[in-house]
Length: 484
Image 1 (tube, helix red, strand yellow):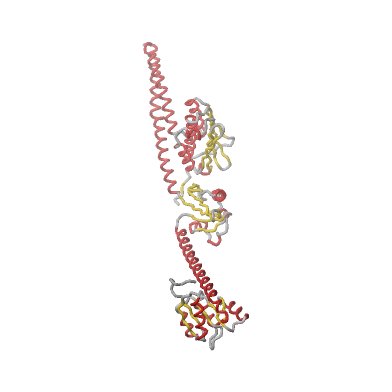
Image 2 (cartoon, rainbow, N blue to C red):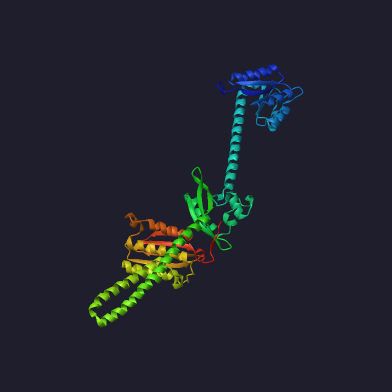
């Protein structure tokens, strides 16, 4: 060990023989060790020398009135991290083993002092490594406490799992939801502690994330409380990696109920305004035009008797008025497409299919399964209608479809809406520079329903499938959103 540029090491030498002490110092100096010595021979002086926290202690085994084992016990009590080496001429094998078992770092016989530099260097290296490891462990513990305090203070639910989806880290927010202690949660699956269908779905997605290694971000889910309230959450799964291998997940769950309630209120305001305009068109302008048509019919009959030369013009006016009435009704139906009192969503989708057939000169049909469709909330039904409307419009205008099928049916606990066409396909339509905003709006409407929408390429054409939980769609006037 070269120490030309290093500070002198602080050694304590417990030795009652001055000649032996000088030999020990010379042997270490000859091998390049730069040492500042504290040479002592009594217990009092030895204890005083330890106050300055030496780097190493060298001690004879046998001293008058004070032996090396007693010195070792003092070091272990006061400076347990300081290496202790016996340097003795009377240390036999049995005593050497006893000394090592008692906590000594090593021993060197006085007639073999040439071993001393190597033993000292090894002891110093090991002490330094222990010290650095202890400092790293202390820093790691401090970081763990800091991170633990940080995640416990966050309102979001945060937890980590191993590859078997067993909890390894949980924060206070999750413990509050589960109403359990940390020791009762760690090592168990979340689905064992939280009996909720959404949790089971999240664990299935977590398992997929562990398999493929791709993060899953901002996935929305709606949970129904026992009191019927709806709470919305968004969750994220991020893989934990060890040398590139996924060995777990970090998961966050954030409540967005207030944000979702605001979005729903904004959409509902828009829907109410559209329904009002539709009602005004139907009951106001539409009725007035219908009344005008009846008056014109009477005038047409009178002119047919008294002034037949005006009949042609009157007939043209009647035709124009009839088309205006039809356009007004179409506008009114488009602004308020779903009327729960007149057939609800199925009837609205039938009209959509008929209108698509007439407008685009193709075959568009509506089918539903044999199972009776439950009554849907008007806002949810309107979202479903708009998704079907956007899908059929895209198929007719951009995919050049010749036939379109709208299918609506319950499947288990979910409602499925699918729109299939035989056009050139979604990818081909987008490749030709077709607008893609409609797809994003469909995805947004699906999320508002607590569901998902998939775009599947088929040969030929495209199939768009929306699946949403029925228990959310059925929440009618009694439905309320929890404030969180």
